[in-house]
Amino acid sequence: MISKSSGEFYVFRLIEGDDLMGGIVDFANKAGITAGAILSGVGCVKTARLRDATGVDIQRIDEHMEIVSVTGTVSLKRTHIHVSLSKKDLSVIGGHLVEGCIVNTTAEIVILALNDLSFADAFDPTTGYNELCVSNREFK
Image (cartoon, rainbow, N blue to C red; front, side, top):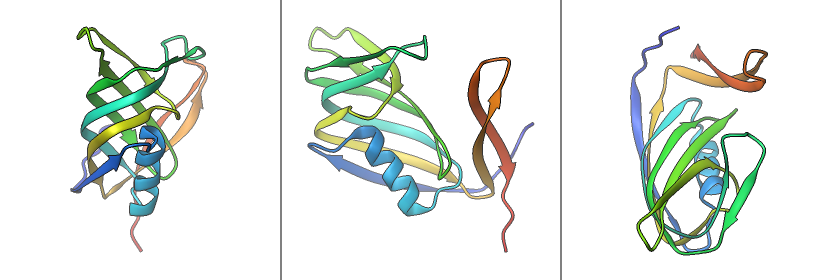
């Protein structure tokens, strides 16, 4: 299914001590975003918590790292975010963002809200995960 939507941009900043995942989810909820895409995310963290591709293992890294990118989908019903982080030696790590990734000084986030759409999730037996469901939003 291909969906087309008009949209609006939101730009906000998280500060030292904020949880990157929690801050994005809180903002989406307060803004009432039913479907959105993270367009940009830059800044730095002092602690990272990332889930790897197994879908099970979560790793914690306690060091200052630059946020190279944040990408994903956000909504009132589901959020799926990946992040790439650059270490002091400029090597890059990345994975599925989970709560506990703590902002060091700042994180600047840009979200495109897709106003005519709504995101939800449903179990997909072929993947074994709850996957994205996109629907046209009805306005009343």
